[in-house]
Image: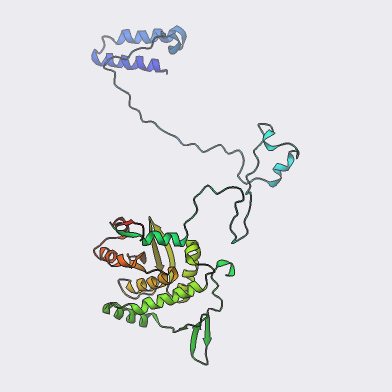
Length: 144
Length: 182
């Protein structure tokens, strides 16, 4: 059912409510004529939009959001040999659109207990506070 | 030293012939049962003099400091906590932890000996320990549930009064504000 047909039905219902039986026939016939005209009420209706009657109530329907999980085309754990199928000279991004993206791999792995050294740029996340800085903060607390 | 982690190996030296126990730093220690210690601490709390427990905390702090390869102030909180919790565990004082509540640093001491109801014994111990580690006058004020807010020595009495009046930890922190230390 289209929006325009909905409106007409709504209008018809109001007319029925105001004058039961009197206008019902005419309004129903109008709807039937429109529907019979092309089989598509929206297409048969005039181009100008129908204005709602002054007494038309506002339709308050809640906006519903449905969360859909992203389409997973393959498991997150991929076989390591998937990347070696492409020729070495061909960049990964130049592959065909249907080719699956390369597996996400860590760029560097720090030895246990050793800090990661950022050679080119600072990390994006803020540096964690040292114990001394935390101590300064807490010792600066005073009653308001 | 030792990749920055606390090494508990050889921490105690048992001299059975001499009847002595020493830490690896040479400090002589005595093993006490929890019941005996509890009585002593309760009496000290009643008298309002917890200096011996604070002194014991300072000794624990010295043990932790001796195991650090750098000043505690430049280390991460995790690194300091690793040494602190190791020392408290070796002395049977429970599991130490840190919590950060806004600007406040809160020390937790789980599974500690049950000494006094107000936890003032543990508070004195922690105050002495962190004063030694930080080289500052630090107080750890009990705020219930084995949590101790670390504050400046001068405001400890005020914070303790708030807690005794019924304020919980979030309320206490809400009544404090960070001001630049002079």
